[in-house]
Every structure is written in structure tokens, then in C-alpha cells.
Length: 582
Image (cartoon, rainbow, N blue to C red; front, side, top):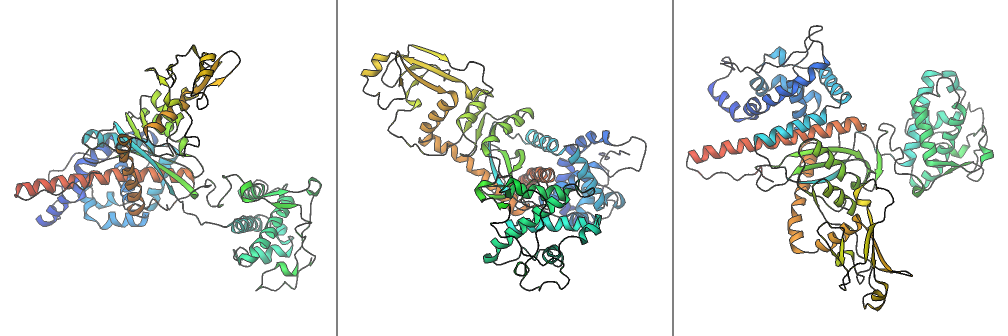
């Protein structure tokens, strides 16, 4: 049953529980700021949760404001559920902030788990971040017209496995499930499966580098044998471990010959067993293991595999990018110098192999939907391209950032050397001063994006032939005319490469580097570097709550600093520096 948090403040909130010194200390802590600044926001927010509960039936739930606040503080200081529960029980500041009796303030781990599940299934975390950012921006006059974005590599709660370790892990998981569901089929397997994967889990993957290649081939053959044996098994065919076994085999291995895909029987050789474990005396099939030349299984080279190969069966969503296996967390935050402090306006999580180029426009669209669209957007070379510059300009946003790469033909004339009209697509004259004869759109149909809109500009052929710059020019000499083809993205890239070499552009773009401090802050103090959860939905939810916590942490720090400065001015002392300003 839904029960709203009582927001009516008590006349005597402490009920003589604390002395004057304790009350003064509590009023200087985050508890007072939570009571006056955060609880009103949480009270308005929790009304959206009423639809998930009955109005009359069931036991009253814990206050949504309390549960939301606990998760914010949990991610603010990178605490576990047990630690935050202990804080609620023994920290007076929670009782002072919420003005609740102990029995209503106390929560259990299952309550926190159920709340996170509710948030995840209904995708409410991003809405909480948006509401919190808008609330703070309005309360403290945060200017959102200038923002910056950056991504950082994060890791979920999983081990980094080698290729051999991945093979062994999926085989062990499969055999463990098989033993539970069909012990008779498990007992009928060749003895090598017990020797390699049953007696000591993980041992077969723990080997010296000189034996790793040999054992990798043996593990690949074992996977092929298991896939072939149990492809039509009644109980195992539909199991998750079977799907993962097939996925790893298909991603890492190929069948060399189509005629060799029939059922095979691969037996264990004496030298294929572990060095420390002798062959079992009860081994029933002491035949010879097929050599690499005889085996139909061929292991792919690293360059032949896609980036979205399985990295660990514990987290199927993890991919491998140029920064390694994991995820990429992307944040957007305000960067106006007149702001008292900066806030995070957007957070998203993507697999590690997703390029930053695909995140810029998506972040812009989400900011626009949340009424926080900036006028200037600063990003590094990973987020900046001609396509993104044009797409952001179509949305009324100036995307600032350097383009990566170098000019391989510096002596050639660039598109930026031509003179264009104010619409940035109509060419007025070439670098030699020649006026175009005609210009038209080259796309037969309207392109899906404005950046792909292409144009064809025609010049007088004879004048171009006599021009001294024709060898360096972009113009193409045809039978009847000279033409220049370009797209809006190509023109935007050429203009940006020219502008990014100027001093004014470099000085203006220096503000982007400030978001690196945000990434560092969240990794050092909030545990963003390595999370305690697995799977992209849980990782994304945790990252969003850490962004919310970062915003409230900065707000609390700023309010405390303002109060401290006011007290120092009242006492005739020098005010402290605004450390909260980034």
C-alpha cells in the first residue's frame, strides 16, 4: 500500500533527544540541507510511484523519499547496502533530516533490492536524474546554455578472463548444469571432462604461457564435442549455459571442413592431462587426442573476431573496445563560468565498442527532450565530426571540438578556401575568384540526415583550364564543365579544421577539459571505476544514481560554503574561496 512521506515539519523535531551542542552540529551538517533543500524535491518526486502500489490493500511501504535518498547517498560515498543500512540505524543525521521514528526509518536489504528492481523495470532512474538536474538548476540559477561532454571507461563486477579462461569457464558452467539436470548423461562423458573441468574448477585455465596455446586447442575441441553431443538434448538444449557455449564456440572457432561436422569422439591422451594429476585408473577410453591437423576445429585469430564477443559469462553485455573490456559511461555537464557550481545534466552507458561519434546527437536529443538543450556543446575529437557538427547545428546547437586526424595533403586547396554565402551551402566563388555557373543538390531523394545532403557546383571549363591553381584545386575537369562535389558534413569538417588552428578557438575550447575532473571525482570518491553490479541495465542505473549523487554532493558543498562565508563575514573575517565552483 502506498504511503506518502509526511512533509509537515514538526514544531519540536528533536523531542528533547539532543542537547543544544548536538542540534547546532546537526544544523551544520548535510542533515539540515537535506531537510530544507532535498526533501521537498523528493516529496514531489515520490507521487509518481503511487501508480505502482495499491491505495488500500497490503502493508504500507517504506517511504519512497527515504529509499530514493538512501540510494543517492549510497552512490555518493560508494557504500554497500549493509553499510547504508547501518548508517540509518546509528547515524543521528538521518533521524534529524527525516523527522521519523526509528521503526519507520529502519530498512532492510530486501526493501532496497525491491526498490532498485522497481526503478529498473520501469526505467525511472533517468527521469529522476532529469528532475533533479532541473530542480537544482532552477533553485541555484544554473545556466545550462553551455555544456560539455566526455566518456570514461568503467568495469562491471566481473573478472577479466583470458581466452583460455573464457573457454574453460563456459565449459565448467555447462558441465555443472548438466550434472544437476541429467547426471546419467554427465557420467557417460569421456573421462577427460572430469579430469580437466570437474576435479578442480579453473585449474585447466591456470597454465604457463608455453602450454596455453596447446590447452586452448584442447578446450576448443571439448566445446565442439559438447555442442555436438547435446545440440538436441531435451533438458540442456534450452539452457542458458548451452547458448553461451554455442556463442563462444561460434565467435572464437570455425569448422575447417564441412564433412567433418558429424558426431565425433575426441578422447584424452596421457600428455593432455594436467601435469600434477596422473591419468585416472578408471579411464575407459585411453585413445589419442586428434592433432591440430586432424581436428575440424580451427581457432580464429584475434583480428577475425568481432568486438562484441563474450568477455565473461557473468556479464553477457560486456564488449571489448580500444580501452578494453567493459562499458563506456558518457556524461554531460554545465560549464558556464558564472554558475556557482556545475551539475550533470545527462548520463548514459554504452558497450565499450560503441564509438563516441554515435553518442553526440543522441545526447543532444535527450537534453532537448528534457528542456536542458544547450546553445554551445563542447566535446573532444571523439565526439566531433562533420556529421555531428551539422546535425547539432540543425538543432540550434554549436558543437565545439577539435577534429582528429591530420591533413595528408596540406598543399591542396580545401573547401574552406572557397567563399560561401550565409546559408553555408551556396558557393559564391572559388579561391581564384571565379563565380560558379550553376549549383544544385545532387541527392535524387531527400537524405535521412542533413549532414549527408550533397551539392554539385559547376564552373566554366575553359577558365578552370587556364587557372594557375587547377592542379591544387578540388575541381574535376569534365568534357563540358568543371565541377566540385561536396556534402554539408565535408564543408563543416573543412571549416572546423581551419578554425581549430586559431588562438581564439583553442582558448574557447579549453573549457571542455574541466569535465575530466568530474570523471576523476566520480571514480575516486564514488566508485565509478569498478561497479558492484553486472549487466547493462543495472550498470546504467547505477551510473545514473552516481550522477544524481554527484549533483547533490556539489549542492550540499556549495550551501555549506555559502553559510560558512556568511558567518565569517558576520564575524569580520575573510570569506573562504568557492571551492565548489569548477
